[in-house]
Image (cartoon, rainbow, N blue to C red; front, side):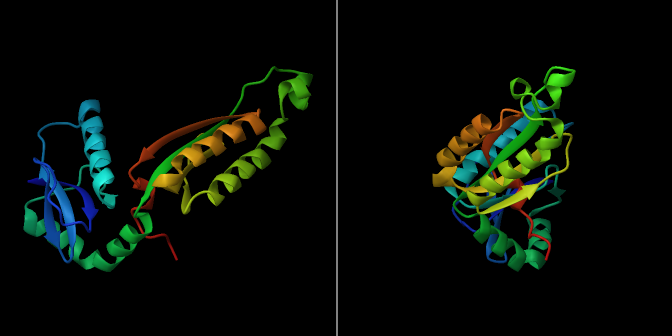
Length: 200
């Protein structure tokens, strides 16, 4: 049994215990499937492996826990989607995923919360502030994906690797411009949110 980690179009070997299985002109990065339940250490190990691979080559992370019997089964899983996966690799090449979340800054209760300058913007103003943040960051990214969540904004941005510092600086500037929001920026990550073709 092997676990699939990523799809790539770089045929260069990966450091053991990883291997790159050729598949219809692409490569499937695999490793021997581990035993037992996935714990936090296993998740961080996988993340570290993907980040190391990402420094060497374009890749599409495979959903966690995707296991097949052998190399032939890995090829069979990838070959029918070859064109779709190749296009997705072209889309993410040279880029990384940066995540941004926005939540409201807790303010005092009572009249001050209705828009007093000391309290920051009123709750009704927050959707507009969120959209302004998202619009600005989208301009700095190749692509973006918004996700459902309890936050006012949970989004992933596909950012050129060379533009990450400028993107993070823009988040800091937006934080100063939008005191009613608390912005959390994390990454760079492998392009988890961009591994699938967008819907037509």
